[in-house]
Image 1 (cartoon, rainbow over the protein chains, first blue to last red):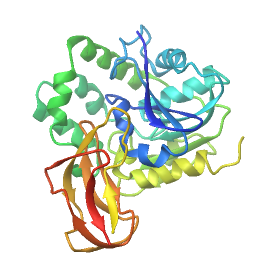
Image 2: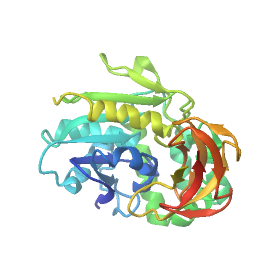
Image 3: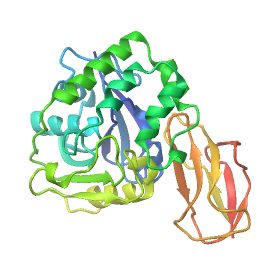
Image 4: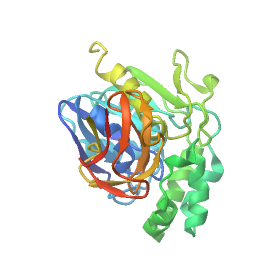
Length: 243
Length: 75
């Protein structure tokens, strides 16, 4: 069991990126041009995703955070940008490993929104055909042009029995988990207004937090509205006084 | 003319496919507005115009372009 750390590009102080359920390090491609001039971009892949190893015995967001902490190998606190399940993992990371995270930008953090899309989370590990996968993945986006043609076939081809089993365990653990705590670091929350996987619900956010809504985006605003998301990340991380 | 190129999308991404031009060849575009949708194997994204001017498309829809290749010129 392990996470996997990949250098995406860029130059400057380190910035860690943590993807969501079923994604991998390449999910951040659209942000690289805008963030690369400001930071060295390191994508950490969650266990059972991308090039990472198997899921741990505890596949809950908190259990995944313990594995991710080891993979980050951070010498000093650094900002983290994270999406959906990855955002929930990042919240536990900041809470359980003080000194590892300096600031959080969370995109549609799971368990801080409305009810998670159970059919998506439980269905993705079970998909058998490219058509079936493409149909499920369509729910991620507000506009179908942001889903690459053939991604359903690619997903099915990438899923062996071990990965399917790990994804099912991770999905079950996420659906059973309690909302993550609010850590003692600055938190910025972004959300696609048309999110159908993890819908925005202002009443579900912890007191004192509000989300910046990204118009015209579903669950993947960092792809669908990458310019708007990049601007918000830069404002939170690079144009904000240290603290 | 301002070249409009495929930007760096990460160390492992070498090329992208042009899915859809959101503006037509010869049309006026404004700096910062999305003008093309491209995709890698895992993600599709819009790219914004780097300048205002008339769009001259170089790479057509359905074609593959390397990172750094000129997709269009704007002027």
